[in-house]
Image 1 (tube, one colour):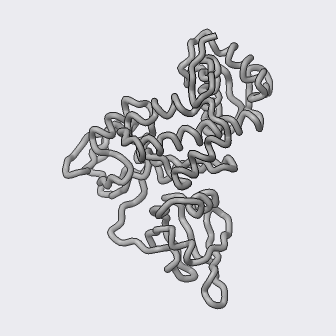
Image 2 (cartoon, rainbow, N blue to C red):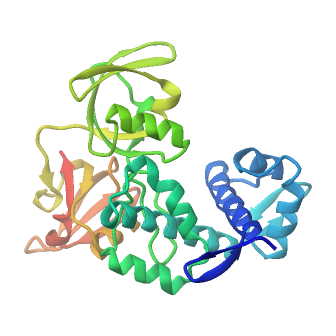
Image 3 (cartoon, rainbow, N blue to C red):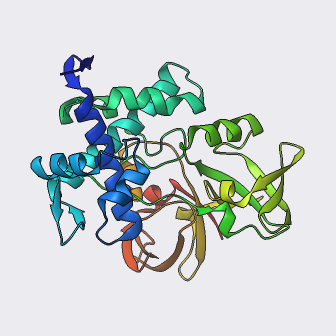
Amino acid sequence: MNTIKQNGNEINHQLIAMEDALKEAFHLEEDKNEPWMLTDLAALSDLSEAFPQDVGKFLSATGWINSEGEDQYRLTRSGRARAVELIRAHRLWEQYLATYEGRQLELLHAEAHQREHGMSSEEVARLDAVLGYPVWDPHGHAIPDEGGLVPSNAGNPLSDVCVPGSAFRVVAVDDHPEELLAQFVALGIVPGTELTIIALGNQIIKIKTNDQILPLALTAASHIFVVPAVETSVLMGQMSVGESAQILELQGKGKLQRRLLSMGFVPGAMISIVREAPFGDPFLCRIKKSNVALRRKEADAVLVKQ
């Protein structure tokens, strides 16, 4: 069997291919919120067209998927857990490569893909600790926590909010297709970039960023996630009862930011202050149909636009 050495472990290429298919199945299930077909999975995977049945047999044999009727499948609990662990390891490696090895943004995905396989849960946890429990990877994607929570993307796709005259800040860019990411990097469209919509056409928008005007296909804009750009912002801990705001950024890094992220405090989300304790701390805020109690010191990790 064709094998490679990775993280001190011997891994075969078939297992890597099947774990990659498992991650695609996870994303497919998240997007569809319903059972999926092996042909759908084959269209997303880098596997040959003759491979779907082999994929189905392997993923079923490992207990990662269950059949739900004729060519209809869902992930099992163990399949979902393994997929999330792979995503977590991948995004942590991207952060490590950017922080400690200085790799360029468009080169992170392929290298992280090579390193994510064959890691134990303990090894992933140690990598997380070395990095200081980061909330986001360099592309702006949320890193799942140790409990397996995978937050939704921050912000909104630029293609959904491209009203001429609107100004935005990029919070995330998709890391695939890799050719598109390389184009974004060449144009200077990376997390933290501010841009303004100049014009909207049938399939093309014009944006102004970094003192240049650029045409951008709407299909490409769907891979860029943004929040409104504002000149002034405040810390959430400074808000009063009855006030509402939109989250712009989680400041700093570490377990507090992870906890906030798990409760839905992502860029682009709306929050409102419902009430506060007699001395003003803690206070109760409303986010995504849930009430959350926070101390003002904790809330100061959240930057908002009122």
